[in-house]
Image (tube, rainbow, N blue to C red):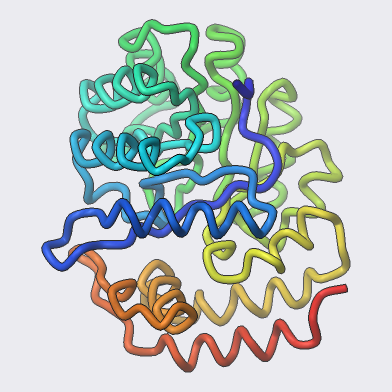
Length: 294
């Protein structure tokens, strides 16, 4: 079992059946296809995976199905962010029983006036509630979505208190200076970035790698970033294709539908609406991917 997430991990999109439940067979096939492209692991039910719309039971049932489909437990991470601490604790315990260790945890994201001490208390309540040394928890910093930033001092303090149980931090702020601040404050943490354009410089600066959404549709391009190739301009252009849409998650799923010829990938959960722009978005990405990456 790996002690921390490192390398090339994908924040997986979540395919849905007609009734809105997870299409676990399609998700397992998607993960295996990504592995064939050089991906090290997948994180389920993060931001790209519409995680906050799924219950503990739905998330765990999906993991069980993934394991039965032959996806190894050490290649799966899971989003464990909930408003209720008890749900984060229950999900983490259930995941550990299934052989998973990697759980991403959001800060308390309803109270936008929470203090740094309160944020630390919230994370500590989850770690103390799980009370299992096998857990490898990752602080999930995405303030532009969650509305609550994780202070660098809180990250450092939690690592000092809990050691390897606080295995890492995912910085999805898109601010490279913020990544550098986390690295300076808590160099023992395995810090991954969500902004694909920052991958190469983050790894060069001691980062652990990436957990990112664009790899759902352009894994070869993201792999080139991980490998340190000179493709940042192409990567940023691909990111811009997706970010200029109303919903990056819906856009990624529309592109997947166009790439696979499977319209079921278009399905999203409320409050998202399906995108009808998949074919046009795919064409733009295809243009960016030509010529092939050397």
